Image 1 (cartoon, rainbow, N blue to C red):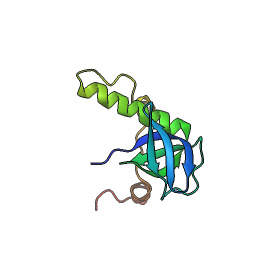
Image 2: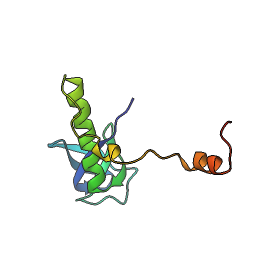
Image 3: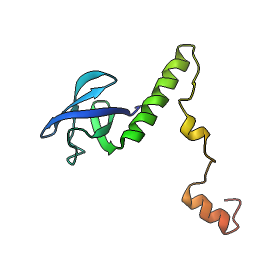
Length: 106
């Protein structure tokens, strides 16, 4: 399984980007994100940026990863998933449409 990690882009030269991930400077591949500019938050997978994300999204992802890391070392999740706990679950659009049409089984 591949886990996306937020990175703050600090510089770019073509498809080569310089970024900070969890406080450490690293190089990332920007081939899939030609619109990326220094100061952007990127969602990276195995050293490759897949999309530009907001600072809020980056913070939420980092909190979730931190919570999982704590849980794996014997701690607890704390408020790592507070943004999910504070909302009601929702159906994906195709299931919501089927339910609205009265379909409750496949």
